[in-house]
Image 1 (cartoon, rainbow, N blue to C red):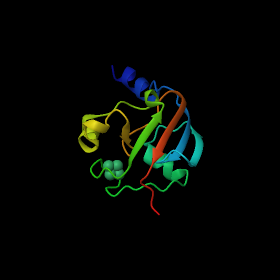
Image 2 (image 1 turned 30 degrees about the horizontal axis):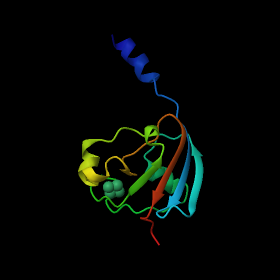
Image 3 (image 1 turned 120 degrees about the vertical axis):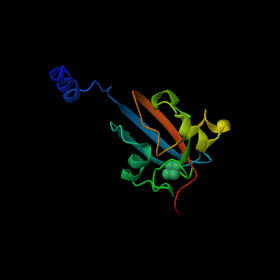
Image 4 (image 1 turned 60 degrees about the horizontal axis):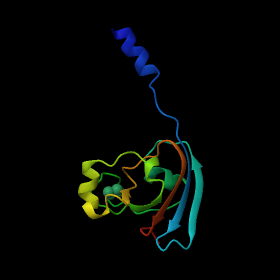
Length: 120
Ligand code: FES
């Protein structure tokens, strides 16, 4: 039994991710960044690696809501939203917005997001 468990742990079945992400300003007029990623890290971390300085007062602990982003296109290429995230976002935004510290990419395609919470 432990041999099977060890083998499963060594080779987890993780779906491949290949995402082209377009980051726009909140009015949709300016493209702030475009990049391709295969990372399954939280979006907040990916944006920082891409030099997009997004606000995050709680440091990614899912409590402040300052890392909120709007998903314009590609919602199906993100991990499912969790109840904890909905509690911070509110029910009115749960279908269009996400917390960058909680959301990860999955699958292959293009995701367009809008930000209005940049450090300036
Ligand atoms: S950084 Fe605070 S909720 Fe995401």
